[in-house]
Length: 185
Length: 168
Image (cartoon, rainbow over all chains, first blue to last red; front, side):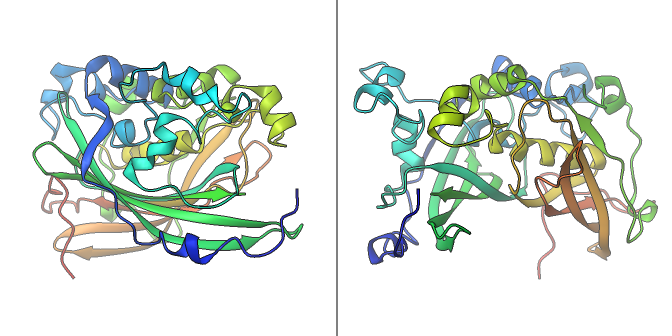
């Protein structure tokens, strides 16, 4: 589909710099089972993630959690309806994420007012400072750092939305910063 | 298939700042071939319901994509993990950035690579700047980027944890 005219409207520009509330991230408490599922899915057999005896001999002194184990989560919050059914209630051919509870939440940021509906990951810039550990709860705050427009070879306009999110543990220690960009096309 | 085992990571010898030089290619990782099951496992682990990662009809006919896609969020964890392993046991993967330039689909085998572009010492720590990427079996670069890892110097101070970058 070809769209014409700029998509970087004044309404879109107005959300640049908007900041979310400081809030608990969606992953809940870090635990062994979640660590197992996550590290197997990234094909990382590092014993620092699961072997308590070995972890005590490392610089971390305890089992650690991959930085991004929580931040990339799409877990839905507790809600009165089933979140998957709710996602498709208004639109049976929804993409499964944009209208999902977590998609609407977007880390507490307001939605970008655009009619571009297709979503793709564009890239990331990540800074690491400390690993989460078992029992940690993660907290985050996000900001629309930038939104720019690109025009494709076919003349279609798309937006590249960059969201900057700081992630802390419950002790207030900065664990990592993730500047993620996504295409809306 | 993955080119690392738990025992290799448990027993990994430290790569020191002194061991690397500008232009040097660091050891690679090979992952794959990727299957729909790998993609599904990732989506399930993080509860990502985006249908382009598990619903082939939706991905091809509704979204106009070539197949279901390996998740960008998966690659987002793979590249830091690769650099983390290069730094083990006592270095630190500080920064990584990358763009998702090409799609990875089931059947692809991925090679993570890193090349030293610059190195310098600050506050007694060895900073190594890298050009990084994630190529397919057809030599298509899907995820070009950069990184900065921090390595100890032989006989030098340890890298602080939590990591504290030098000021200025």
